[in-house]
Image (cartoon, rainbow, N blue to C red):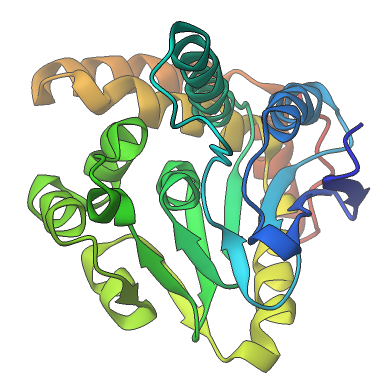
Length: 261
């Protein structure tokens, strides 16, 4: 386990904390490798119902990948750079491949690769003071690795605006374009997001997993194809033990006891 990522499971919530506040939680190679492993572990851990991703410290969620001294143009540096951004790609894929919901708790600046993490999560909530941006263009780059996640989250025109200008947006604008679901006063942020995660952890885990996978599957289907696919999936889901338990609990006016089957 990397000392730069904290991980704990409590009340069905796996909390992943990016822990390099002195460099705005920039992602080192070691951190990204650890992050992938933690996602894989949380995805199969029956004690984990929902995953919460946040950053350490009061200022930053994540400032992106730590590129360090990878500005040289020699062959070794180019290969190192490619290996580094490949690790970031693997982080985004790890989020995509999860079998459980993941929430971004944006406690500060979410920039560059940090913005990509927010866009890739299922839900995102932020401190009112948080800011978001894709500043790569300001140093002559383009946010290639975050483009797909960002386009899926906020649409191509809003993505172009962030990419072209390199400017930061506040939480009101982020909510307006669909990057975050909601924002909270800084002092209430942690409690509010925990309550959301806690509520989600009490839902039918089979329905959450199946629903999440189905949402991803229909992204590139046409409307008719997606309806046929979703029809078949709801039939499959209706045959599960937890669906039957949900019906019985509703009829008996009690809380359901989920088995994960």
